[in-house]
Image 1 (cartoon, rainbow, N blue to C red):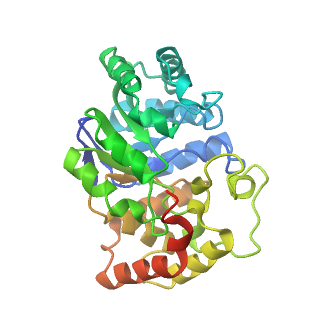
Image 2 (cartoon, one colour):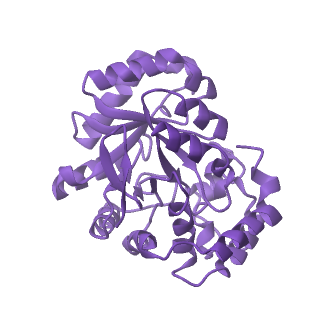
Length: 327
C-alpha cells in the first residue's frame, strides 16, 4: 500500500483510506460485528487512514472506530473526524467557540483520544470559510492540545479554494470521481502548491460506479440513496454525486466497459489515486470483502492514456451538463 503525506499533520496515510459513514447511518443497517469486520479487513489490507464524523449514527461510527484502533494499536492509524453538522440550525452563527469545543469534546470521548489527529469542519455554511474568528478558534484548539491539525470538508470548488488559502488548514475533503471532475481544474493544483492534503470522498458515486445498479434497483428506506435522491435531507451532491439516477446508471454501464484491470469500482478508485495532488481516497464499505477490494485498487496499474481519454469523453457526453456548474 502506497502512503502519502499530510504535511501540516506530519503523518503519512495510506493512499486508500476507509470512509466510515456506512458504520453510522444513512446506508441501511450495518451490525456492530460487521462494522468491526470492515475496519479489520481494511487494516489487514494496509489501510491506515479512517475518516468518520460526529453525526454518523449520532456518534456510533466514531465509537466503533475508536474502539477498533485502540484495540488494534492506536499508533498505527490516523483517524480523521468532522464536526459542525450538529449545529441546529445549521447557520454560521452556530460556529462559536463554545460549540466548537463542545463538539470536539464529544468526539474526543467517542474516539477515546485526548488529542485527535485531524478534525474537519463538516461542510459548514459557505460564509464560515471566510470567517477569521472560526479559524482563530481552531488554532486555539490545536494549541490547547485538543487536536493535532484541522481541515475542512467542502461541497464546492469555491469553498475549497477559500479554505486552501488559510495558513493552517491541513486538508480539504472534496467529492472527486470520474463523474465529478471539476476539482481537477483548480483545486488539486492549488492544494499541492499550498501543501494542503486532498481527501477524495464519494469516490464511487454512492456505489454507482461499481456497475451493480440498474433502473429497477431499490434501496432501504433508511438509505440516503432512497431518501436524499433529490436533496431532501442534505446536499444532493452527496448522493450519486448529484447525477440523476437514470443518467448515472447509463454512465456507470459505459464506464464499466472501459479498461480491463480489476473491477469497475477498483478502476474508479485507481483513477482518483492517479490524479496529481490527491493524498487519499476514502471509499466506504458495507461488507468486509468490499473493504478488501477497495484497498486492492492501490495495486492496479496506473490508468492508461486511452482510459483517461475515454473517461473524459464519458463525462462530457453524459455528465457535465448535470453537475459541472453546480459545485
